[in-house]
Length: 385
View 1 (tube, rainbow, N blue to C red):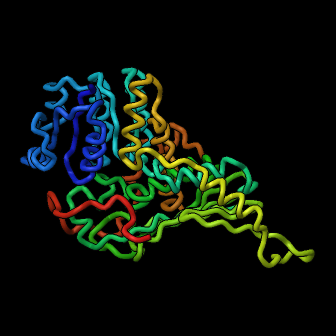
View 2 (cartoon, helix red, strand yellow):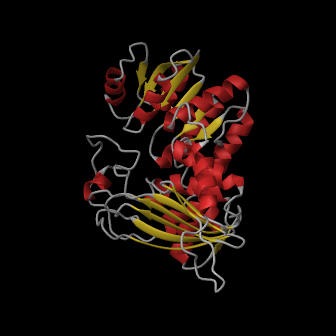
View 3 (spheres, rainbow, N blue to C red):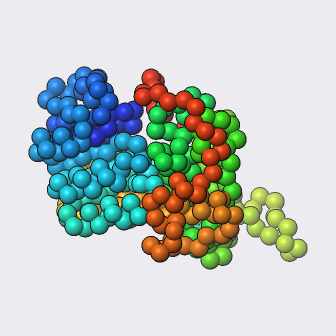
């Protein structure tokens, strides 16, 4: 039985708590920590965690409890210090996305993980979705041929009050806008599905939130050896219609699931009806993918528990978290400096270092509201099909 601690008891911690409670024979939640007075106690009561104790800091939690694993569900700017502290205390770590605001901080976390010998996993729960598993299986089959183009829409909508929460809306505390904090999921999926691009160019703006320094919209182009991918990161899209469309040599496949396979007439124009045999084959390949036992946070936490049991690395490790941050960093650097950024971003590059983004990023507007907490549900998936 593993002893679990939760650092940060805001809205996203509920996804972690619900996930842990799905494995009652493997874990017990023994401690909750939050710097906001009363917040950890309220969460303890809400989830009926009568055996768990509450603490006013991560340091107090780590000192008082005999922990095996902690979930860190705090604002992005705190992830590095808290992860390093937990790892150095000999505790395994699951840290919420994004891993950290800079590559330098990501490497500090990875170094602490190596020194400690503990496990480090960065949340990327969308890999644990049946639709994404189907898309991954089809792409890995090679049946669509060489990939020419991908269109990835990380389309969200948030009202103005969203940026009134104290840590949101500034480069220093939030680390960025939707490119970092929403599209991180689709950036991770792009890396998982398509691999690392060679170069990135981008533009960004604040189109609808005059109470935030950060962008609320960016559009990036990712260059691969022969193909391109375009990524939209947004909190200004009504309908939140998120999608991934991959155009291959022989067919297009997408999430939500759809297959189209064109064939050419002698003059190169598309033949009516296309390659229906290939469409049927790809549909069958997707349908044959077995459903996941657990999805989302529960799927990822289940994998981490299995990794500890089996003494193996988790499916999503710290390096995967850093790779996504490298792509975010490249998008910001490209948009701010109006140039193409080559990957990888190395330690001697100023954009590798903590603080460069804060120093160089434009303030589209100044933050005008600051509340310590907000009522209501945090929605971690699209509200529309």
